[in-house]
Length: 561
Image (tube, rainbow, N blue to C red; front, side, top):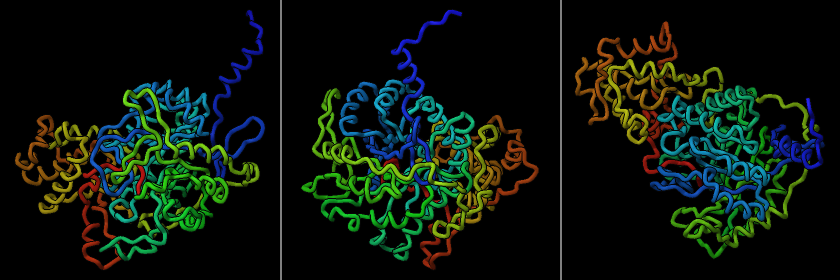
């Protein structure tokens, strides 16, 4: 065989192709950059990179992406326009909140890789692809969306991590606690999928940070004062406990407490409290969003001096952060972006805040200690009782991996089916589930098969199916209990009788057949159970029944105060 001599240029080119951007990995509670000689600690110098979408605003979060979003990684002209600004500001990581996996992302991802810029990619999709609470659990539809995103991006060497959720758990809203075991189940299934495709990408979660000293919610939740910090750590511990396949690799905190008008210090912000609470945590932590976003007085521009603290005082527990936000972002009628895009979209005008951020990033690198060789063993952390979240800590009780084959079989066999036009419209499906389940209870039935109970660790067999299939199952039960009266399979035109299933058995018989069950063990979970934490009756009523989807006014997708 004829062999061409390897010139110096060719050797260098091949080395670049082989080496690419260094891999980021976790060792203990820190991130490291893989190096041929000695691995170095890696600090995230990031910025939130997504234009704000169109949708109804929610008072509970800092940023909303309700219906229409722009995929920033599928816009090579914009990526090419923005890249010089990222490089000049020493930015090495972008956080992107939503992408469309069917689009092409090669140009953006490759140019960012060549510039040594990583991407932390949230897997959620507005409206239909997010774990929110018991009404939108980890299901076949969400898992398919998440896996489609992973499969589309796995070929890129600069994916730092995939986020399984963002501010899902609201410590002031107990209905969101129902999401906790589903998040843990999603971590298990995502990491199983990553191992199957030989991926070493990290899996993370971005949590809403809270104010430790001033946490108080009027009315029925007043008793929560000074207990919410425990829940914040409880959530972090639960998501990182257990063997490697069960545990997240990276934990983010969305924190906006370093504000000029309140005094820029470790003490006056939450930084000192966060340091104390997470000093013993077993996973890398970073600020998944930071920068004052509730300072109502814009006479105090953000100078980003918290970066100095983040890369000095906080480095024993923190691995950097994501500044919020690159593009103009409307929060409570105030804009918090750091650049303005010209009307034709071809150019960027940067603000003094962006220049200040770049100066702080450039001036701070963080210590290169400890080295990964000095960390020692990384033993799994036992899953203890998470009393603050009222979640069963036995990982054997996690919801099963959603099974599309079983769920599709069941959907096709059910006697009453939700209209395909609304089957995945969660704003319609969620309140319909509530309506149907109430009628089922009044007719002698129940919705135990389509809900779970986080305290007992029991989950109905249908809980992992899509929202439409769960609704169709409940509708079929009601329709059959009502002697197949068509008026009980209509719901204002949102459902109809399945002609192809007229000769089939009952909904329960179809469940047995499609799921291969001899019995219906673990199918009587019942609705999410009440927590006996207070005698306030309105609190218990709130938890006794699955509430209508709490995000009808707007979907949580970015940040939260």
